[in-house]
Length: 421
Ligand SMILES: NCCCC[C@H](N)C(=O)NCC(=O)O
Image (cartoon, rainbow, N blue to C red; front, side, top):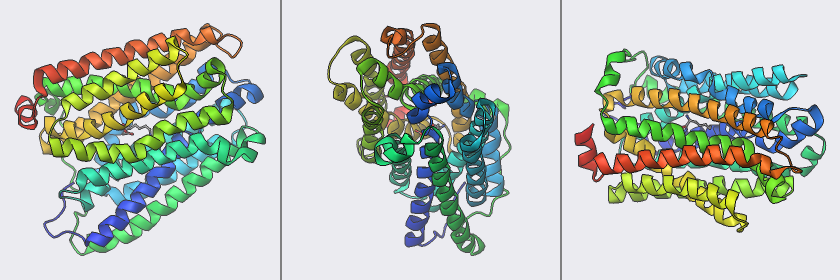
């Protein structure tokens, strides 16, 4: 999406940015609402780890195909309408998850939520691109991503903040998540309503301007893009399958934390990212160095997993390492992607990365759940989690190799990256 030469008023742009960020908060809260109830789902409903893993894997499954379609729909119907429609789909998914009588209904709810949520994320990026065409774009995107992380942190903190809700069982926390999805829909509706003014005034494109998707275009991406794609798949698969699905339970069963403390520990990763993601983005933009920061951020993930699995060091150390990685890698990855491909193919490039990323996240959730079930991992058998940690450690180390190859072949300077693409 390209903004028209005359820009919408600055105040309106920041108001829209705030509404989009508020909507993103709800989206990330619902995504991360399964981790805190994982143990309750096992105790009260007899779910296996594979079933718990599937509740998050099924979010990603439809997007293995749909995210490319979603990008085209955002271009065709505009960011505001797609943000509104997809947040409605997300709310329907959250309600179905919370009120379903059996596992299959819950899984259908998560599937519906996933169908809405990823296209919603593309629409929010397009919304910010519409209103912040100039120098504040990276900052605005970093801030929206940061507020999204606050949603994830809040989901993890919810066992502490809403202890009474969790004391009543697995369902009330998921009803609360559906309530948060409703506020997300409200923010999207206000954004859609405000957006009509500047669009009617010709200050923003009116949609229906989708560039045709051509498979041949993919062949024109340079080698550096493909290294970044593989890195994106490996890094997100590990960080999301571990942090959003299994880490709270892992902290409970292997490191002896209670649910509230485990949730709090997990939430610090997201809380750090609220502030650090925009700050790292700003820093990388100023220094015009991307690949070394990416390699450093990627390195911290296998190191943190090794500290967790092989030592009895304070959990603060691994939490800090994962927190820096989780802030630094996304802050660098998306601006770097924009430098590796032509601007007119940026949407296609991100769509393709997210197609394969979603397949990876889905697969990692299923594999980790299966490994835990196979080894009968539990509080009584903490060693049962070893297979999962070896799997995550190997995948994140391969991600580091990709980051180093990217740095060595193409990543020294902004203009070198452009030349390599
Ligand atoms: N909402 C959690 C899944 C986000 C996946 C999405 N495709 C993505 O990569 N978003 C950027 C991010 O860093 O969250």
